[in-house]
Amino acid sequence: MLIANAEFSSLLRGVLQFISYMGLAIFAENVILARALGVTRLMKLVPDHKAQVWDFSLPLILVMGFSAPLGWATHNLLFPWLRNYLPAWLPVSALRPLIYLTCGVLAMAVTWLILWILPRKHRQACRSQLTLAGCSTAVLGTLLICANQNYTMLQSIAFGVGSALGYVFIIFIVREGRRRLRSKDVPAIFQGLPSSLIYIGILSLAIYGLVGHAVVL
Image 1 (cartoon, rainbow, N blue to C red):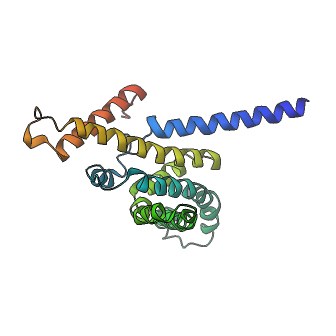
Image 2: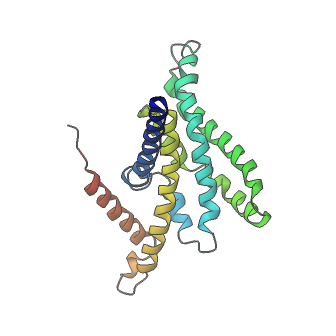
Image 3: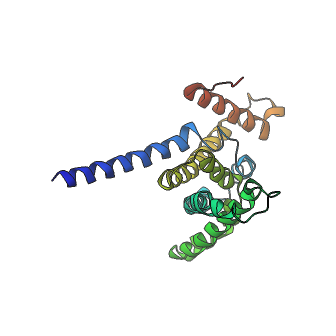
C-alpha cells in the first residue's frame, strides 16, 4: 500500500510539474512576448485571412513537441560525447545552432508522417504550412532556452509544447487586437503593421509587469 501511494505521489508530482512548465511557457516565458521569437511569421500570418490558423498551429505544436526531447538528448548525450573528439579550436557551442536545426528538421520529418492520419484536405493544408512552422525561430529559440536552463526531458517537452501553445494563443490575441485597431479613430499612419507592433509591445510590458523583471548591473 505504501509503495502504491509513493508511486501515485510521484506520478502526481510529474503531472503537476509538466503542467506548471507548460503554463510557464505559455504565459510568463511566452516565445513572442518574452523572447520576441517568431514575430516575423506572426506578422505575416495575422493579416492573411485566407490562411487557417490551425493549419499552421498544428504542425508547429507537433514540431516543437518532437524537437524538445531531441534537443535534450543532444545537450545531455551528444555534446558530452563530441567534446572528446572535437579539436581545441572548435568548441561544442559553435555547433549548437546547426545541431539544433537538425533536430528541428528531424521533428519536421516525423510530423510529416504523422499528418497522414488527417483527412486529405486538412493534411495538404497542414503540410503546406509545415516548412514555415518548422523553420520558425521559435523552434530553435525554445531548444536553446531548454539547454541553457538545463531542463530535464520531461521539463523540455512541457516547455516545448507550452511554447507552441503560447504562440497559438498570441496569434488569436493579435488577430483580435488587429481587428479592433481598424477603427477610424486610429491615425492612418499607425494602421496595419505599426499598430500591431505597438499592441504586441504593450502586451509584452504587461507580461513583464506581472512576472517581474530584474536589471543585472
